[in-house]
Amino acid sequence: MLNISEISKTFNPGTVNAKLVLDKLNLKVEDGEFVTIIGANGAGKSTLFNAISGNFITDSGRIELDGDDITLAPEYVRARKIGRLFQDPMRGTAAGMTIEENLMLAAGRGGWLSHMTKEQRNEFREILSKLNMGLEDRMKQPMGLLSGGQRQAVTLLMATINPPSLLLLDEHTAALDPAAADKVLEITEDVVKKERLTCLMITHNMQSALTLGNRTLMMDKGKIILDVSGEERAAMTVQDLLDRFKDIAGRALDNDRMLLDKDAFP
Image: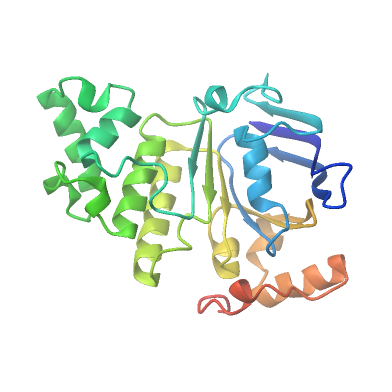
């Protein structure tokens, strides 16, 4: 379980460039929940992930994961329990290492520095075969030669090969073409469901925000301004989300990337 209490963060405090990016934010996520997060640029979505991951220490508040206080824990300590994917498919893998070496490294078995047994190679082959991308026959190919979608799919496997307590997906399909994005989202749903992962996913696709997972959050100015789930969420449309944002924030949502996405409206 993730429990965030009253966290705040200001960048460049005490200067003319001071910017409040997280404003007494509270969030509780139960084990096994799959939460989608939307909001305009600068709303604080990725900043929230950075706070959870330990990229910086918050100015105030408390962050707990599985009952442990990780508020002041360094990033490398949190990484033992938190998996994260980024928008850029080039992040999270070693381009010059092969697919199987990347998987071995992620599994904590030494990667290319140690001998890979036949059993380990068969295990990785079986995992890759479930992607239906033919990568199980290309395990000795360098990661840098894969397409963005293939690389992001492998990165997802790497982040979950040892199931984390929390999986953070930071617009992990935004840089992919529509077909690749759909495939990676399909794999994401399967992995999260199979491993019963607790997952937070930032997306610019408002329709996906309503159809994936079981709960949707909307952020604005460093706060969560909308939190919907259950029957209320199931009955919502994208237009309902836009209307709710206007009612709560007092202005229309003006993020072109979200509004112009080809799949934004049903």
